Length: 582
Picture 1 (cartoon, helix red, strand yellow):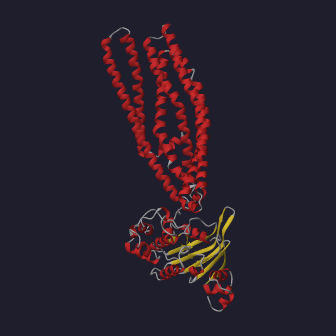
Picture 2: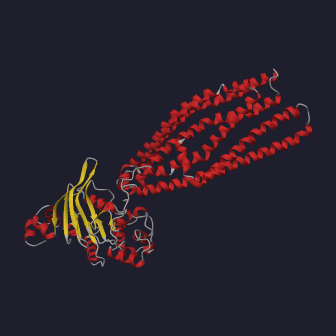
Picture 3: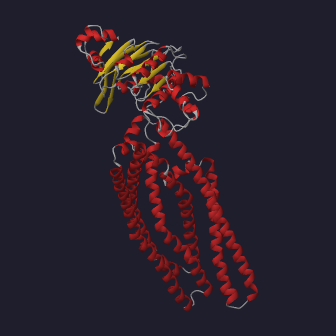
């Protein structure tokens, strides 16, 4: 019941609708119990003594009771549905807010298809359980209680005969529930795998086409699709194994009712009207028994989905706002990494890194692939917290900054460029939605995006396809850069921002960045020497450690990693460098 209590809690003030739904349910069951009494009275006091003058009034009363019962059922359903949909809406909103809070590690560890299914399919299963299963369970419980009260009041021996079937039905339902729960969990997990394949192929459709792997991906999808079918069939077979047993027991109850009832009438133990009452009330016992299998099925689906939804909702968020805001009132842009170590599991990706960057400086960071360059971005922007040491902005540890203020003070371009399915203007102004058209235009000009955006059919109002579909890699990078510049933040981090543009465009962007009126701290992470050559200081990272640092001239004199990368990228020899080529 704790799962249902948790789900009902999301209804808020609309729980009153669920209460009203239950009230209408109670009234409806009362009306349902009254109607068999009308038919019983009709048999004993109208048909048998042939007092037909009372027939039509009693038929009219029966019609009114039937209509009132139908109205109660309608209000029961509509009120429960409204309350359930309200809870569903709120739960979906809470889950989406949770997704916005979760660390990037969560998205690395969980498949996109599984996450989507938790926020949609699983929540819909919960909604159905609240809007259909809960009212039905209440209705059936009331029906059984009323039926037992009526039967025991008329003849307890007759009632005991009918109840002989109940223990066997309960045993069959319990066995079915025990087997269905793990079966539905397996089906739920397989659905996540299926959704993950679809999500991956939507995101990577160009790669699939480029490598002519359509048949392979179709085969992979069909494999997961067949596995999902098998899991569902497995669950259905469990239901089919026990469903006919429960149905047969319900039929047996009807046979017992007719047989024993006829004997009781012949022996004079009950009247024909009372037998009519028993027969009419029999469906109040039969319907719950017939529906029991389906309800158990739905309840087990509910529990399997609820476990997944609660797993997401209660996922621990390790990156949180501090209890006290110690951030400076005005941000200047000093950045300091003080003996920073970052560890994922047993692997250290940053090892005792120290940097002292003054406001307004341009810093370059280079190193081999996988050396830890992007990890520096993650600790500065606090996508992850350092394992040892501290990251400080303006002398205050970033863990003492409110997350929104910290990240609002940093303009960031990411290595994996992501654009939203919206206009170019909205993508550039994403971080500052209320910014002026002038700022959007100026930011696009600095990023060398204005020329190609202006040539588009609708200019800045052109809709960008999902993830930037329809744009080249260089164009996406330049819009991403313009988005970061538009924030006018005190700290600007460029993570491999110009890798997809030509050298001429890169030089233009560097000149525009240098001429920006805002004196922001700029951290450039790059593979090209040309991207960092004019930085105030260049740091070389290898295997998580700083192995070199200094200006371009200083690093060239050291003849280390930077020196060899420089001559390799320029196609020079040592003698050319000594001759003043660089």
